[in-house]
Image (cartoon, rainbow, N blue to C red; front, top):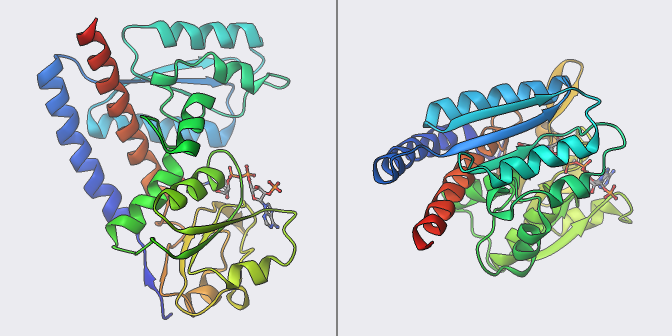
Length: 289
Ligand code: NDP
């Protein structure tokens, strides 16, 4: 393997310690700890495991956790009224509505019920719009925020580089493309209808994969020296693999995120950062009232 690893584990531990110190400072100054409310409908295995991971990370940094677990078939109106209630609650700083939502539930209507100041997942159109425009205060979805933080902490130059993002979802690909653009990369976004994906990828100096397709990007699709950020979390024969074929791509890349241990560990700690930001925003709002 020629590439160096963009490892997320050590950096995530470092950020977790920084967060714990900042949360403790907030608690001393404001007389309360930041709090995160999580809404989940049903017992989807991946979703349950994500809730558990959130509880653990909250405990580690000292953020209060408020779970709201509803039945899988909860009516849409009930879900929306809970999100409205949490949005108005004095004891909640950040809110996450976990996926999957109940079948037939209108995701847009649920997201619209969120107070944008508490939308720590950055899914409300108000936050997504500000990210698009790059103006004002907004929450960046935690996964792409973690990818950018890795590039930053490893000192990878972004300005002026040709970046190719494969995937255009609202939670990973699209916000990652915007973040790279804000850092002055020249950005191409690819998706399932892109013609000649290999050719597009070979142009990349920074290549981001967020497709959910195991090992989609192979060594023959990248140029020597490329920096690779792989967000993929897939399981092949019981093994976790990324959207990038690690072995063949690492032969040519200069830097690459491993899977597991690359972008994955970053997501939770970046989310905690958003919760603290929400707590500070609410505190500032309360003080000016
Ligand atoms: P989505 O399924 O929402 O989006 C996938 C995107 O990839 C779509 O834009 C789709 O294109 C594109 N795509 C699919 N197949 C191809 C293909 N053959 N060629 C080019 N583009 C393709 O996934 P997410 O964005 O939610 O997640 C992406 C990956 O990131 C997944 O592996 C997920 O598990 C992982 N993930 C990782 C996290 C982390 O913490 N590391 C957190 C969240 C997700 P189109 O729009 O045309 O359909």
